Length: 332
Image 1 (cartoon, rainbow, N blue to C red):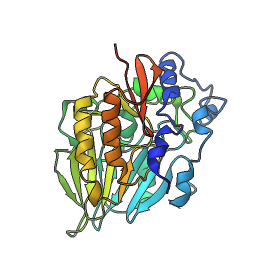
Image 2: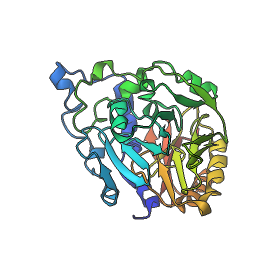
Image 3: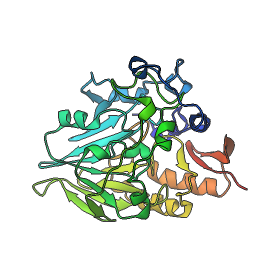
């Protein structure tokens, strides 16, 4: 696979064109005139971000269940599946990570497609949901699952209730590429309420059965207060959520803590020598571990005023350095 640090400049939701569309969503939500129309495009012309799809990096991955209409599923490592949503501009990726006795579903995506129906085709093992963080594009189908582990933070608890505004922005004109799933209603779409079954913390471990595969929670606050990475030490896999993915990383929202983010990326960069793959939550699922120390260099460089800066609207700027990009608040 190509060097994924270069993918940070690729077209995706997470570039400036999305941001104006989000604002437009608050005043102009597409209203389908009938049920049939609700299953078609949310905008009559394909938006720019989806013209480059499918991403070429997926050609090297083994696809599973190729006839699924909304999700695309790829094998990225033994007993490890990436569940990709290419038809919505977030291009969110969840992961189904399986052991001998149970599976962990790391994030549940947008809540546009029926994720539970999909994962029951992929495994018969009991499933525990664990979220990389609780932004709406990662918790959309949490409500479908009885066992959800969650960080014990105020931010997590606040995001457990039904939420409509952010969800509606995700289906505004320009955010959908192709048809939505049969029966999906754009007008009523919202993030449904869910609950945490067991609160977790930094260092929490999940044994997937028979003393074999174990997943370790690594607290990585910064993008949000409840951001985590998930480490599979035995197999050299690090699931990074939105702490790292190939594309502009969002660091502008009120819940973002830049000092904490820098500390977190340094924390995971220290793991790089023992890793085989880094698996982010948007755009493309697989990166090489060498991306992590380069990420540290990049975020420290842009904070020191190095690299390029471009306006991104609504008080935001896009800062880039060495192939990485970060959406940040503009200096006042």
